[in-house]
Length: 72
Image (cartoon, rainbow, N blue to C red; front, side, top):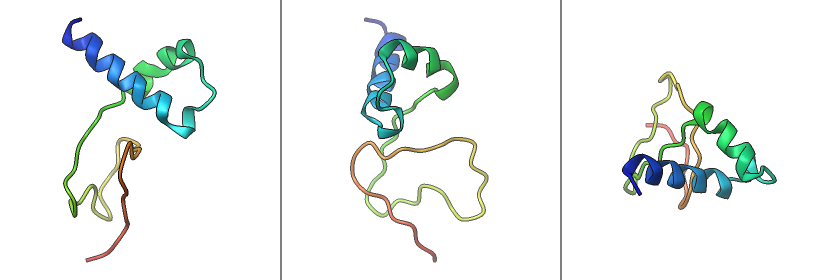
């Protein structure tokens, strides 16, 4: 399996685990895939994911672990 297929399979698995896409068939998710373009990113504990006031060009889902909002 080439790297593009592995990447797409991993992204599809992320969508399938999301409650937002619960009930979607694999065919429907594959149709949505080009618009959603899921990417798996890993963050270490206490990492800043986005700062207040930053422009957000993507939506994020927590695949595992927890995230908290805070101020500095």
